[in-house]
Image 1 (cartoon, one colour):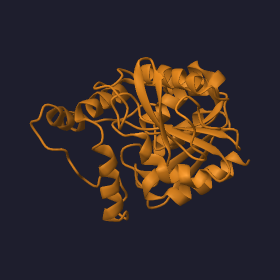
Image 2: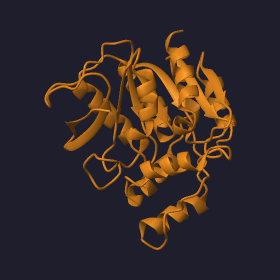
Image 3: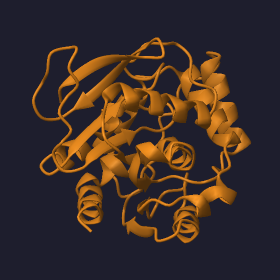
Length: 266
C-alpha cells in the first residue's frame, strides 16, 4: 500500500492509501465511491487494517493512518484521552481536505468515531464500529500487566486472547507483529484512556447511519456491548461474525469487507 506523511499539530503522521501515488505535497484522490477513514485501536497502527483497505478499494477510497507515537508516525507519547484523539482526527481530516468520511473505528478507534459523531459531526458521513464499546471493561490485572511491561519489569504477553480459539496461529502472529510496532508505554496510556471514556449516555444523540461489527468470540469488547451500541444509536445495524475475536479485521477480513460493502451500498 502506498504511504505518505502529513504534518498535523506538529506530528509527522504516516498514512496509507490506495490508488495512484502522488507527489509529497498532494493528497491522494478520494473521490471514488465513499471516502473511508480507518481509525485504529489502542497500541495499534493503520497498517493493521490493510486487508480491509485492499478489499474496499475497488469501489471506495480508503485511508488509514498511525496516531502520534504509534507505528511510523512521530512522537513518543500517546495522546491522553479519547477526546484528544478525536480532535486529532478532526485536524487530520481538515489537512486531507476531504469530504465527510465513513469512519471505520476498531476498538479504541470505535470510541473515537462515536465521539467524533457527537462533537465533530460535520466530518462524519456514517459509522462502522468494529469490536468496540461505549464504555470499555479493562480489568485492573490487565492494566497492571502493561504497566509492568512499560516499566521493563515484564515481557510483552504474546497471548491468543485477542483472537477466536478458531483463529490460526499465523494470523495471531501477524496481529502481534503489528502491535509491537508501538512502544508499550503508548499502549499502556491508550488503555488508560479507554478505561476512562464513557459514552453510554450520549449514544442516542448520534444521528449518523451506523453499522456495528462484532466478533462472536471477542472477550475484550463482547457481543453484548455491541448490542448495546446497536440499541442505543437510532437505526444502527449489527453484524456478528462467527469464529472471530477482537482482532476481527485480520481474522475475518473478507467477512468484514462483505458486511461493510453491503452497508455502504444500502
